[in-house]
Length: 263
Image (cartoon, rainbow, N blue to C red):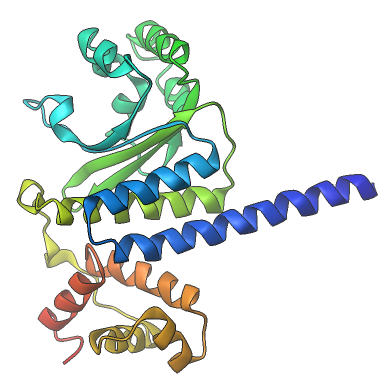
């Protein structure tokens, strides 16, 4: 029993370290000043988790080639060419399920969800081909906007188990990295977001943090002012950005001014 207890402590301790790293990444992505820096940070966290391959892309339009929607990717050598040449996108269960998914999902679960689809056999063949290139399993994180699906982040390779809290944090990272790359590369005109649906019902604490942010204070400075940790401030900021439909902190302040939340 004691041995099992020690194993549990080691596992839980590892998850806590991972959670800390993911929260830190949310802050670091906000501070990145180049697209290359964003890519480096993503590559570092994926590698540290054991995910060998990944991709972040805009949801391709019907008339758009998949390659034109890619923001950043690292897939097995030769796989991208095979994927395009054999038109695997049409039978990729993760891409087919993406348009209907409201939450992150595992690739194998998307295949299971579509098992009654007329093309399920072709999907199985496509997944078998992917496994031959080392893509045995992975996760997809949908990125939604007011009008529906905007993009996605995928990461995979060998089968890796993520805790629910880690999945939630990776979901936040997907959104943050997506909008940061769009902004840094000047591609904002490619995605039009309706901000009229911003939720302006903020709590007292959110209002306090927003006001301090507008004054140019950092998370550490706000945390000291409110006597909470800077990580707690960052959690509030992520919630604020979601409510205000803002791409980053500066955008959140701009939206708040527009709605008269701060002055």
